Image (cartoon, rainbow, N blue to C red; front, side, top):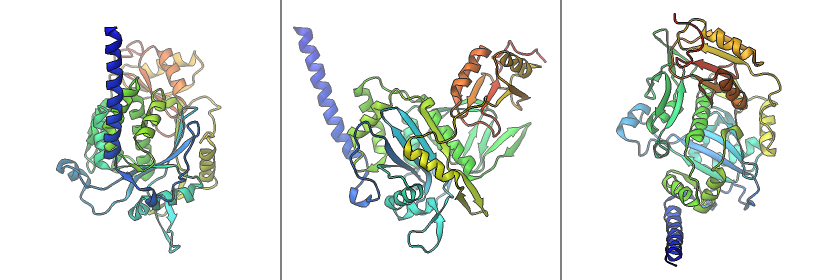
Length: 411
């Protein structure tokens, strides 16, 4: 009897805590009234229906601490630094994401000419929702906005995010400065990585600049999303999930219909989510002069049509993966030996030397190739596999680290 009474007390206390935290978080999550977001679909979706959400990262400097603000400058106004259209099939637990480059050319609503898509945000959230909906032909259910300060806070609440860097990297403008290998980034460092437009890598003792294009930057942002989704610890009970939302909620600005209960429902559905079920692409674009990127047709329309219907955003992988094995352990013939071993298991790989030595072997796969990357780890008998962004021309890159002692000979 005493045990039963204690159990009932615990349950009642838990329910009271849930009720209390719901009200507290509902009040603390900044929301935009429905009358100010008329471009949203507005219809209540059934639990088994996919949701389309527009994710916007604002570049407002408001609230930045002096040390972080100094890295990004003090510029007036607000623009959309990140624009992503997300479709989440809750029943199938599949997520699809299309990144829209901030320099994408879109018509002004008054027909007076064109502007970059990030400039539409200056007229308010409804303007960018309307622009993206018109551009894509897809009705948008919900809106989530995150600014610089909120992004830093979210990453810190999650305990940081681990990214793999094949070479030391920096950006003197954004403040990024990391070494080689797996690096744990705090919120400020993750923000510097996501916003980097002057990205450099240390190659043979010299700093070499990569392309500073909007497309390279978008690829890094997608890499960061994969890393966060892979790393975040998902609570295994509803109370823990509500606590997580309570921590993160105040750092989000949402439409008024995306309240605490729906956020918890989405997060609970998401608890077993694997990035193997996430497909992320950047809208196909062409350069127009030095100012704009323009949607490349018919490829861009095909991506939007696939997103609307929940179909693959890119053609399915029908051929073998393009594999590059890099000798990053300094042992003579290591990459060639690993390539030969992979060949005996049906993998075809090119080999080369990495400019830098790394401690731990890592197999990095473009979205869609994670299963093959894990199979490569199994064949090599060393290392780990992860989603990421690899150099053009490859689907999977093997960074053969110093832990791969069975490959090659000491130089």
